[in-house]
Length: 221
Image (cartoon, rainbow, N blue to C red; front, side, top):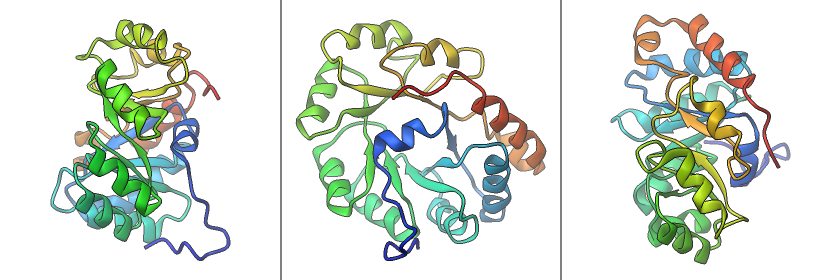
C-alpha cells in the first residue's frame, strides 16, 4: 500500500487526475502477472493515471502489484459501487476512484477515506445530486449511449462549472470530438489496453497506444 506518511506522497484531487493526460485508460486485467509490464508500457508511453476496474476477481491484486512495483504510476480503482469496495481499493493502494453512477454512500465513503472520486452521471438530476455532495468533476457514463457530445453541450448551459470525463464508447476516432468541448477535461477509454494486446503480452503495442493518446488535444484547466 502507498505510504501516505512518505514526504514525497501527493494527494491527488479529481481535477488533477483528469488534467494529467487527455485519456485515462480503463483497464480490465484478469492475470496479475500482466499488471506490472502493462503499467510500465503505459508509463513509457506517457500515461501514468490508470483506472483498473473492479470487474475481475484479481483486480485488487492488480492494483496492489502496480502500486508496489511501478512507482511512477498513479493507480485508481474503477467500477467502485460500494463503500466496502472503496475501502478495499485504498488498502490495495488506489489513489483515486471512479464509479459508474452516483450514490451518496460511495461519495461520502471516498470523502472519509481521503480518496479522490470521479462519480458517474448520465442526467441533469444526477449532476445536481453530485453537486450537492460537493463534486464538480464527474464521469459522464455511458457517454455515447447517454447522448454523447450533444448531451454534454446541453449540460454546459445549466452547469457551467462542472467538468466531465466522458467514458463509454470513446475511441481514438471520436476522442477529439469530446475533448474539444469546454466542459470536457479528459476522456476514459479501454482502447489503450485491448484484451488482445494483454493476451499476446504485446507491451510495445500498448506503449504505442499510450503515446498516441497522450498526443491528443491538450488538457484544459
